[in-house]
Image (cartoon, rainbow, N blue to C red; front, side, top):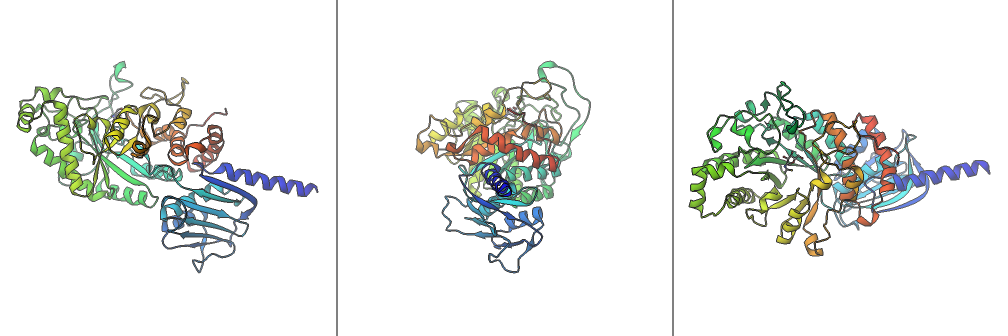
Length: 516
Ligand code: TNX
């Protein structure tokens, strides 16, 4: 009787673990009695249409491949079932019985996410609790932004982050490849962009307002085209699309340092060593538009993503106001304000990308000069840009600094490492709803999803990037995946312990979440 009770309790514990183990929290979980015990004779029978799921499991679990792709005893079976009753290709059904594990994805991505969930269910004794999980994402855009422009992030560190974001079922990695402080992608037609533009002589120490001087250390680095292709392929194997961003017409100083003719003053500039909004912006001459389109052409060759980001944010108009060439251009085009000139510039890029079958993405400032509905808007200055854009019929990604800026402090403790400012603690991220209540149901459908930002002015190393990303990106991943009605912060915190184990074993520098 005693043994029976202990067994029952053990089985119940494993069953309870099933409900709590998977993050983001699945749409529906039915726990059952018993466990599947994985052992050295367990085989993997995988549909050739799901190579990514199969690779993930064979790497992580060192399973042997079955002779046949049919389900069998003591087997992990992966199939793609296009008619599966879930609403998206990213959806899956995972069924674990004492005899087998069955992963059915509606598409290859669904099979991959089913495999990720299975890895989370597996305990250290290689047991998986019996369970049926039906799961699919709330949003199609579940993104993170990395900023290798401010502090370069070596390729290996990017690949490690891709593994972590994919484990959270995130599917977009936005790479902010150019800014005032560095140009980080090789462009064959203009090699000086990286020869000169990828290196700054030193970096502002501390915050701008403290005027503490500079660190005196050169900082640089860039991705070759081969590096970008490798990152794109590595990410694609994990169902992560790389969203490349080439900033324009502002945040341009690293390019102006080699090509002053792209600017407004002819002044000889160096790669910027300070932070903040910079008045040195591209001009709107036809030759400059052409130059930047040539840059984009090379980026299109590197990235198959239909979305391409051109920035568009934080463009001070001082230089355009003072420039006879910019004023003449406005007159020639019949434009009444510099904001309209900004709109003209972005529309030219939008038309260029649209012609090539791609879609422009820009920060919410692009709405101010008028832009066609084909442009997708990333709302960063709170929700208002996103609300306006959705009402105008644009697709929208919600990335408000109030909830998704992971460069802001995550705790008020004086022992937190120096950050840019602000305060975005874990719970605030978790409470975020990407669909603002102001929108009608119809307008709300314009919200593609959400994205977390790791602006790296104050993240000098990949370890610091990890510290700022984890666990807040995990909370955002749940916001982006889990139905709103299934959100439960206390339960999320409990499940987070599983991710903390994962991060420990993989050497990820996360911020431990204190017991509540
Ligand atoms: C604003 S967000 C910026 C970035 C900075 C960030 C720092 C956006 C479109 N522009 O250039 O890195 O604030 O929080």
